[in-house]
Length: 130
Image 1 (cartoon, rainbow, N blue to C red):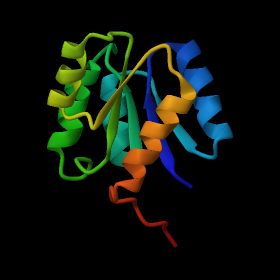
Image 2: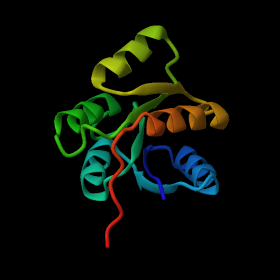
Image 3: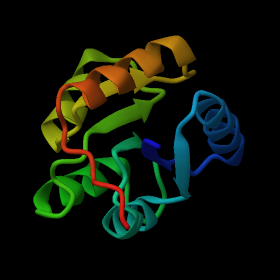
């Protein structure tokens, strides 16, 4: 089962998106701030990260930079999720290391397309354990 780490501080957004992704067959792991997201990416080995950019403790920009700087997590695709819809925000997310960018409010079909595109590009998927 494909494992997605959702890093989102807003409880309503986190709950709604995680339930919708689980109904689509994904295993969803939750983090409530950027620091927890970085830690959980290292310990849970997700196949993909959905990263809110406006997070407490450590914002999504810095959390993504740390994920991409770590050899253990740099291969994991990251999709930035943000309410900021300016082209400069998209560029900033890609500059931080995000593989793609999506705006809030989330349109699930559009986001699922981006998730599937990144997963099918051959990003390494951790092998199942014994």
